[in-house]
Amino acid sequence: MPFAVMRNAHEALRASIHLQGQKLTAGDLAGFREEWQTFKRALAVHMAMEDNFMFALLDGVGGGAISTARVPEEHVEDTRLAAAVDAALAAAETSALRAAWSAWKEDHLHHLTHEEEVMMPLTMKTAATPDGRARVFHERLLVPSEQLPDFDWYIGWVVHMLSQHGSSAQPPNLATRAFAWGLQHACSPDQWRRLRPIVQSNCTPAIWDELTSRFGLDGDGPIVSSRTTSKGPAP
Image 1 (tube, rainbow, N blue to C red):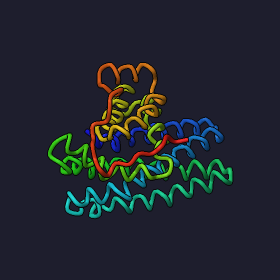
Image 2: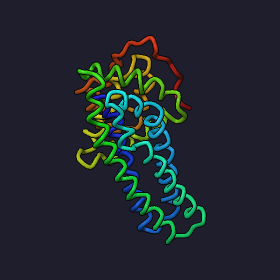
Image 3: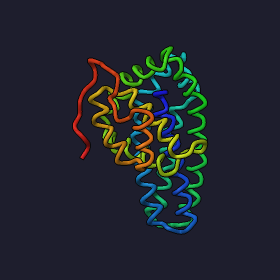
Image 4: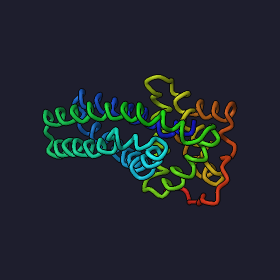
């Protein structure tokens, strides 16, 4: 399931939101600020992958279902609500911050669920087989997304969050496996050689051992494509 790269990234976002709530409840504004800023950095990459590449792909196979469901407009609303959080955080107004963050959180969690309900069934229409979907993901999402600022960092952040916190339905090893295995299967050999150390360094040793000994993540990415480009490791 190569599109688990997008789906399980939602679980990393949810884990960060949970941490934000804990820090805000404890009155740890410095800790909240750090988690919020890191979250926004990751979300910027994730939303760009959707806005620039994934929405068009799924609209194409789904007869405009993404546009009909007004999913892109939800990103605009999310940005508006997040700006209110930023303003309250900058003013160090605790009560205003809690109110703004609560409004943003409710909207964002609803958005993630809505995306999953609308988008994930459409991913099955992109190709008839898992290998076919891996190639579509490679060509339509992975190759262009590599050019986004912070892409390599984002991959490491998602792996770190999943390997530390798991998901709402999966323990850390399963949540990490779904993401990393899907990513490997959408990679060319050069891409996976670049991304594999990022995945490894952000996993717990036990999870990485399971990924390599049982699922071959120390091997190569299988996709061969003339469109694949090579990029040096992130600084």
